[in-house]
Image (cartoon, rainbow, N blue to C red; front, side):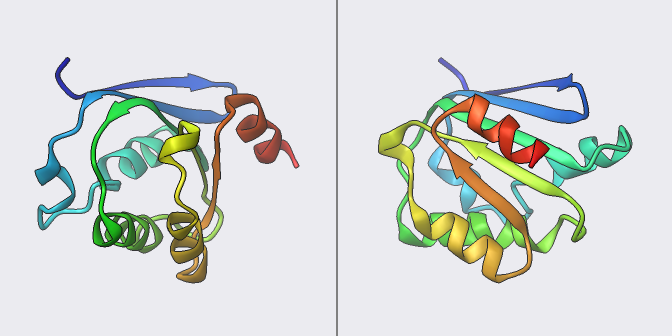
Amino acid sequence: MPYSRQYSVEGDVFCVELSGEMPATALKRDDNLFEPLVRACRDRDLTKILIDARNVRTSLGFMDVFRAAKDLASLPPPQMQVACVVREQQYDPLFEQVANTRGAITRVFTNRKEAFDWFES
């Protein structure tokens, strides 16, 4: 299945559902992987993004995870919250640690409801 992104808004949360096979080159490009998502969220005057990556298939190495977290932290203003929902086998604490250390307000979940609960807390 080809890689795709679907956007929706649930209440005050901009939701992005990723699915399919993410090309290995997606994280090796010069541009920021999260920029289009953050731009779309800002265009709708929203400050909460939920990225649901449970249906995406990819193989990420240490540097890929580090770069993705660094890219995320470089974009959102301080008031933007970003929740990522992943399968348990996708979870890597490095992503959350690097992103938050660099100023992002980010959490990684394996359950969509927990992510929405975090937005409300």
